[in-house]
Image (cartoon, rainbow, N blue to C red):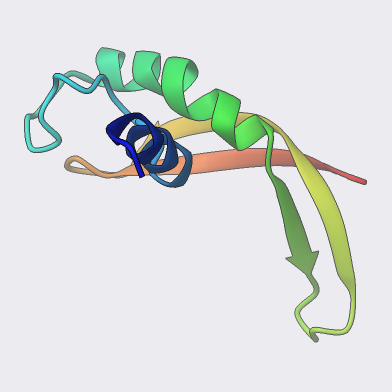
Length: 87
């Protein structure tokens, strides 16, 4: 594969969660994390479908993600809240 094809494959399998010139180890403000969620991660999440399975494992419902929100989870961690509608 050429370098261009390799870069495209890497972007498909490992989408950016922050700009490429910012180190993943660098601590950044919450404001920027929310901004990057809306810019980089949210469009990828909204294209996905999920499978909701009941606790007994017998019922399965396929749903499409309609919204994503982010919440602080302590330290540098974060929680995602998803809203999905059945297909």
